[in-house]
Image (tube, rainbow over all chains, first blue to last red; front, side, top):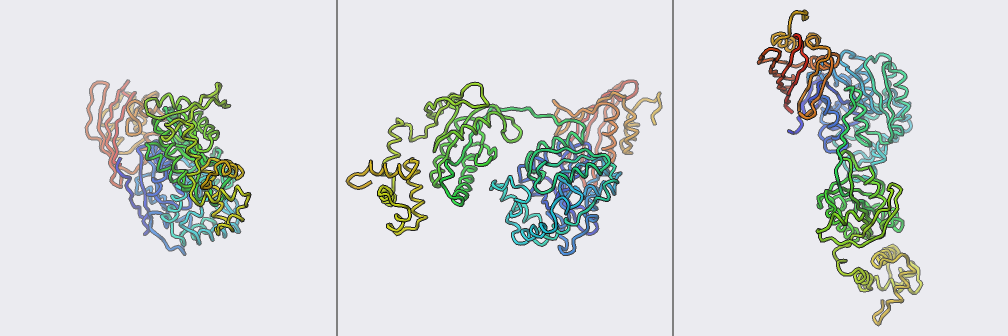
Length: 517
Length: 120
């Protein structure tokens, strides 16, 4: 496919950027919310998935409102009224040769789409409103909260600081948070963002609802963090020919959360036909990686290392020919075409984790997954449970992985069986052994617990722990900060694979030789 | 409007399509007609199927609501079979080319297969 062409429609004397994609027999105009950027949308997985789904059954017309994205900038201190911005929709439709279109209004785009439908009934084929509202202060935020939001927008615009206001479920997704920060920067300037927020706060289209004659679909996520679901319930009562569908979820942007669910509902409403479910299932090896024993690290250290480890995870999964399949809490899931790749990636991740001072615990399993969307079925659940059961540094895999990886040169050791709620039969397990464990397991273990692996400073610290000294006392004696001592202790426990200070003390006593521990 | 005795022919189709007359176009079909569309999103093994005059009517209304030009170039008729090609252009320059094969029944379109390609 050729790159999507961006064109400009003239609305008064302002150029409105728009894109047309898809070959459907009817037109669908997507009216975006607060801010948008036509180019950037295609770079986000969820956004581009949404657009691809919509353009599969329609001729999808996309645009950036004046003052945002690729459209002309306007005087941020004199932003145009909702009516003028609504007229941009008409200008774009004219330029694209659309006489009549279905409109999909998302968030702030919804009141604009409603105003359009009431003003141009003959040009509105149908109306689909997602996370919409008729009155800002009533259903989005009261004036006092608005001021705080605008202050955030003005002082921290472009850093992604507004993300928690829209998609709290994605705050921990570093990749998405970075995209969101770019999305802010490339969609509006700080002044324009604040002005837009103020202008949106004046939205009140309650008077026009009764004048909407087009068939209307309302979709709202039940726990929408930005717009109260009551907003759509109100619209359902006031718009004559409206149908409301509430779906689970709390993230507000239409391109986050379960995008396919939303696209399915829109497609069925607009085409009268249920989306053809792609029941395509493929065999895949899943790997779930987590950081082991997070409680031992302070919040800040955990945050930094977790972020660093996630970056490494992205790199390693790509390097091993896998695909990222999403994160769920502390679980990072990736999928591979073959089990050997998954295990090699797991071994690389285990090593990388040690390099940044954390320990990993991983689970791997193989089974059928749905081709569409992130893996959520049985195979995914089993893999996550294996990762939960995995101990420090372990790569706990189902026996199936080992059977399929025969001939790959990888080595596995029996790890018993596990009973899982999802499975009728206990699942046979193996431990994947990394390259240095190709020697007999016991020798490798001995080697990792030799005191020689400790640095001179760490040996000193172990000795002092054995003397029963506290971190503060050790810090004083070695003229180090207490923080540094804590780090040494954590590293010692990690290297020796020991659960506590007491165990380290016992270890030190056991290993005291002529040269000390 | 089509009279009962008048069968659909290339000239009538050309006039209706080029005049973007959705109502007239819909009247050419039998009540249980089937239109199949094959394009990038609707591959040959799973073409888009539009069944019945009501759905076909919506289909043509949607297409005819677009401010675009249509030119029906070649029409070939052979008994109850009819074929034509159609070149279309949107005001922003995007072009669409379609070829259609039709089967007639009692002078009305009973089955139509459209293969189309778009600039994009």
